[in-house]
Length: 222
Image (cartoon, rainbow, N blue to C red; front, side, top):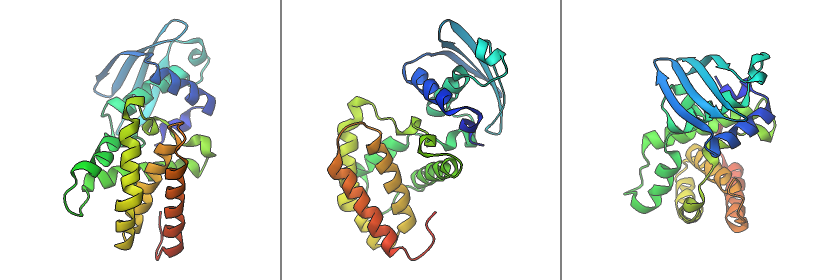
């Protein structure tokens, strides 16, 4: 289940800001119960129950939640869980664990032409989860959390994307690894777009590879 569908878009936006700004405190997990304090106008207690990765119940003592709605404090905790805690396969699907670090480290230490299968599955899960969201929502539905890059990591991101679009992805495309190219290129492209830094040349190269891929695709790319 995509837990984001439980919230209105403006709630998700505010919740993501809360998560980024460190408002989620004293997080704990007990079996299938997640608990945290979220700092807002005052400190609010959030309790979330999950089963096999699905959210089954959410409780918060803020006025918005007490009126029967799903609040930003609940979503902030889920963003926190998604990026820092291993809970269940469905909750993790939107945010592949250490996906950025594993993918962009490849440019420095990958040996031979084989990619780690777990890494590829992580990226595949990410692109599938975004496709499911976009099938029901507009572009604002793209989950921004796994796309956020800390300022200190931007040089690594740009260097690695340059390697991907100039060397590795063309090699993979020539080897007819079209689905893998699509998944990795989608992830890299969205990461670049979410930096807020002008990387026109790199983004143009991504677009050029997308066009080449789709023009020569000999099968169904999901």
